[in-house]
Image (tube, rainbow, N blue to C red; front, side, top):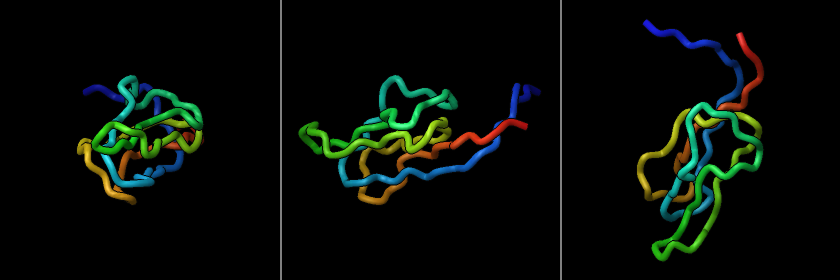
Length: 88
């Protein structure tokens, strides 16, 4: 069995869609890689590709769950984001 090299503690944030549209995750996004507050996680666009809203990292942390379906309604789950507070 493979075990994690380190265990992190923190707070989970469920980031919700600020508007309805098509959810497009950033192509360079990587799971469990450090992100800075304000980094773009995804864009929400209309059917013509015009930007309606952005989903940004709320604090320094990392993504550990991401929406798979492209269509979102206002308030739908977009991703799980971990605010790292420490290490075990």
